[in-house]
Length: 111
Image (cartoon, rainbow, N blue to C red):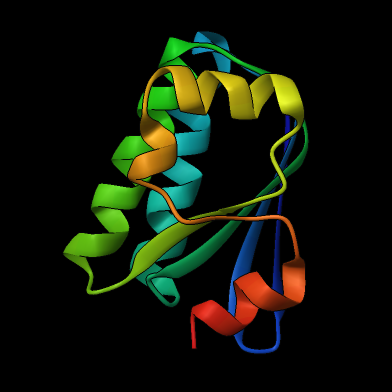
């Protein structure tokens, strides 16, 4: 699991790649929560390179969105692969998260 932070057009971007499993959740949660508390609370979570996510990873997504909202922000998702999107749909998280396939459109939605 790899995590990278960047800023694009004044929007904070968190890019996750690899496999998001229970082994990685605690460390990533700390990093994302620190980022929310020290930066803007509006985050674009780029999951275009995320190959797999388990239930703990889904919990991380939900918890991170809640944390962003506590700080008057939001967390949106960019580019889930078909397998990840299928899991989001199965768990109905696609109805909670704003999900985009176009990065420019996602960035604009947070302005």
